[in-house]
Amino acid sequence: FPVNELNTFRLINSRLQGHPTTHENLPGVRIASGSLGQGMSVALGAAQTKKLNKDSHLIYSLHGDGELQEGQNWEAIMYAAGNKVDNIIATVDLNGQQIDGSTDDVLPMGSLKAKFEAFGWTVVEINEGNDIEAI
Image 1 (cartoon, rainbow, N blue to C red):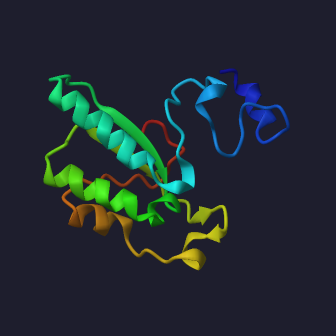
Image 2: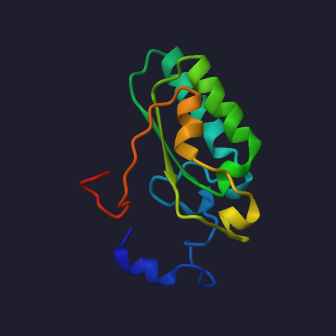
């Protein structure tokens, strides 16, 4: 979409709300789960389906660090490693913020890197998330 559309973020009648929906036809958004934490499970289901169908494409998902306070994520993360679902790339926006404030004020979670690694995931850290080359 046009970059100047970002100026309409969170304005009335804008399709760029704080919690995207699929009916707004945003490019690349097939499901929006946000803080409720279903996104990882949905992405994992899509990745598992691709593996079962011998489809070699990857599934990409984006998660906020506040979203990862929901337990359903960790069930999916554990399932993926335990069942060798290795065609999913989950990106975590580790910005320390969520709708209710600081993630540490709401529920301190310690090292997310250590948690993912404990569940058998390979973790790549990028210190500057705005650096497309690094990503």
